[in-house]
Image (cartoon, rainbow over all chains, first blue to last red; front, side, top):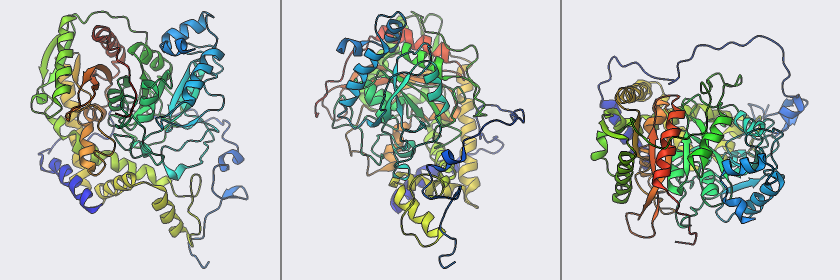
Length: 71
Length: 480
């Protein structure tokens, strides 16, 4: 994979040589303003539905291994 | 029964609305057809596939094949990845909900390159999709399954997603119509994210009228996706019969771009068709588009590396067994769950975003993106549309490009610039050509791009051209 990544980076490096001083970067093509919705309560997914796809649901929460193996 | 499968979506919807055929009869015919999938195009078929939604809308009784990147409540959704094997989402994507509200039903979920990363469908964890025209060849990607089911007579229409060409290129390679709408035309809610500033869903259909029909149902603002804006005025069925007064821009750069002679021949014949319909062919300059692939393969992996951080084995999807601590669980889950191309892009993206390289890669790529958008703005001040071949070649052989990722990436050369600029583009089948190495003739797509939110005008022009081209070839099947 090292060789493949080098080949791709070599191709991509071409843009590094372009003179783009003063060009504004585009992060998003559609002009958008911050959209706010009314702050009203509405139903959300029931807890058991949201937990159903979890590998290890436990006590109404997601269970994961401890950050320290011997903890 | 087979007569039902010959109908376009628009024809079938009209017959259902008139009571000439029943949704049950029509859906049953398609369920039977889908069950005969020999192309590995479906990952799963809905139990009640195509039974239709509850709506009495314009798509009443129409079964739609859905790319497996859309969340469908209770139905497995894998995005072509092992890391989501067995995942059943708790909710349904807005795009699918909108189709259902218009009366359509989900026929099944289609195979795809893992997380939509690929141009051949060979990056699926569930095996490649075969091209219905020649089973020794790829259908294109990443919406390869969606293109193959429509071309292969396994679905009347399909939903796909396009980040750098993933609707248009497979549509081209399979001889069908594929439309990538303007970024923001359709909600991305429930559509598994690859590169969020580029991803957009759209229809894959037999003809332009069907594409318009699906887009009309799909487009619209969604409170669940703040980047969705919809298409002002909606979408009406196209009816234009000529191209008088319309100007089509051919990029000057095409002259030196390398692509198959057969593709060039079909492209030039299509330009002559445009002229015979009264359209005018002009030359336009898109000088920055030659850097489109370089910019895209910085921006898309960068966004992907961030988006894919969520697959950590905690809240949903696969978790590796037997890991000692949390970090080991993360690492093992991700190294087992992701395929080679996904890992490649996560590494590229992480590298491009890393401190010290950010400006040289990501910052520079964002500026190239500005330049490409400016190129199109300039072109559209002189012409109505920009036209190119959709793909530099016809469908290539399975395994032909898997050893060289860069060669695979260059397949998106003609489709990536429109994605970076966020503008709509459609691929329509324009003819057949022999592969460069000789052999059976295969479909060639013609790409038309329009200014942002110019979908109606784009569909009108594509409709007129489609009728003049009269593409009526069908896949012969067989093993090439």
